[in-house]
Image (cartoon, rainbow over all chains, first blue to last red; front, side, top):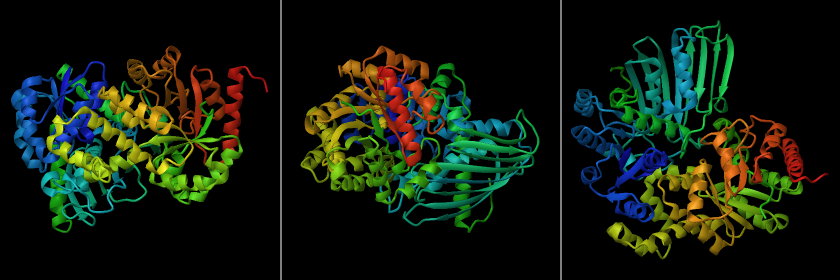
Length: 339
Length: 297
């Protein structure tokens, strides 16, 4: 299978590198606006380089495109793929605003095109296992949850597109908390209401801190706290705690533990503690963590077999609508907003 | 000669492959450089005369303290790992990759050339890119030059990115520069040993020094423990084994009994934050090594 990549920044290098490392995938083209990066890559690799992605698609005729550009370019590039009937992988988040993607979602549906959006935490061992436990019904009715997503990234004004509202659509909620929002939706279903509070401190245009309350359609309520300006968090760390009728569950990047009052869903009562090494399985080619490899493998297999994945554009649109509501709510002092 | 046991550095810089929270706590504990120096000296006194060191900001202070310590200055062998990748991932998020590179080269004679690169990009000659690469290596090495450098490792994120993009020349450029300019052994850290061996065989780098995770439960071993073991059997290399205790999952006895039955194990890197466990681990490694080499105590 031939893939091409547009946007050769951090995420483009990562995904294109992983897929090209698979035995059944060949990276046939790369495109970037930065002649510097492109020149660098061109001198070191055999991959054909372009500054116009349409020309790349015309010439290379790949079987799929990786779109790893700044957010404001996502929708037009995705629409171009739909026009050509070309499956694509899009780095998250989907778009600056949820409504921008209406036409895209509709046209993807009509063509039944295979798409994936890069919410890779679903492919992280502990969070994937937590999903199995939740779906087994072992916990019983889920009452409340609390969750955090933190990283030590920004302690001065940032440079570049991520900190420009026009290009990124927002700050930590858009750029990072969307990983957590995606997991929460995966676990608890559709969101009814959100109310959000945000705070900009280091950034001029976008929020650095956010606290959000959720009410899901199934009655589950809970909160999320997020910031990219949390000291002493070397890596992006997600943690979710769930209180349920038959017990409680805690999951983070390193472990999953849950306690059941009585046996249910095939699990014993009392504590079950599962660490990352218990769940580890080697991957065919790893850059930056096995969850990226598993995600990219899922995309490649989906394209080959023309099957949809759960984490597609439609799902990413649902995440985006929640983000819109959070920003709207935050502008009105946390007023609850119906999704 | 590669040191048989290396003191690991992860605990000093908040890296923990089992729990981020433990890593963060240790990062706080070791914010006093003296506490790091105590562990280094303790290990040195127990015969571990080499350490891994990533180019973390905190490592600059450690390097300064080592240079000022008469016992360690010339006799502690340093195996440098560069770059400290998490820092650059954060910087890439903060200002983008192009800005990282141009800022790093800002003070050098390459600055003018960079302007040209940014303007003309694709037309710039191959030798200029080679120069940029080695200047970036020198930039990262600058603070660690005074140490007794035995080897310089390329971080797994870069090694594996290079493999993924099939840009094998970059591995060659790195190896040649480390050898020529620093008289150190060029080495590679990887999460994909079989693929790296393929690549190094292709560019003809013989008997390479490679750091990779290996342990009997296969934690952090790709693509599988079987394929990894097969690669060790079928190739000529020197493996510096890391994650040998599977982030604390295995006891030293079972861990090293397994490890030293594998071929091509040159060295083991051991993370030490507790001196009591350290001696037990060092002794177990030496015992299993002697057993392997047929030396009786």
